[in-house]
Length: 348
Image (cartoon, rainbow, N blue to C red; front, side, top):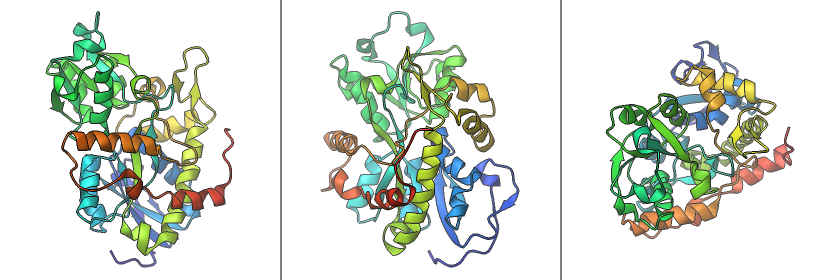
């Protein structure tokens, strides 16, 4: 991709935001792939609050219906930044010589922030325990994603194996209709689709993934070669804006002192919900008020132990066969550089 000074105008229409023109004065264009999910909220915040603009960046949003579909264009330098699950496909792409780097946390599950819970169909939930998963039809978004490893950890609670259930591969929004039509028995469903399924009356939240897989690195920020190698200064600028947005997000989080349950009721919570309803397809703010928000490390650090664990699972399933390690794919230098600029985090 040819990199040049950007003097045009970028619209936010494709991103769900008002279609007004912006960033005419920005100097450098960064192309970012998104799935328009609630865990993309640091992007939305960075755009709305002007953090990218402060770094002299214009952002071109490129929507995808799944993070897995970003890997090829990221490797072909058609995208600079992508965000999503560190999947088997990602590691296979690295094995094939595609230059990708995991550079920051985008969604994780510290205590209270299990934003991809195990849901069970309402008519099966009365006496349900983990052991009842055996033989069930369980929905997950695709084969070989971090969700597959999350499900494996849920099954371990009853000493079951990944192959002890029937896997139904459906995009998260489709889980809601699948419960209504009784075509699935259980699911691992990310927010806000999880709350939509529960509110429909067709599913019950059995356990948050923070319970059976605490601190999992569910989603990550990815750089292609344009950012990671060809123009690392651009990568540092983007990361600085991103960390500012992540910290604004963390200042919106709160944890109930009695239950430990996380919510968007912190200082910036109301404004974050306003941003989510502006930038995503879910316009009902009560959904976000009830949904469990994702965790996101305020310093951008990834849980490398979780990445190693999930990669080991992919290899055990025969989904990754090449010689690749999570440590080799991870590059923490951009976070290190950004932290020198933004300083130590103090919860607002």
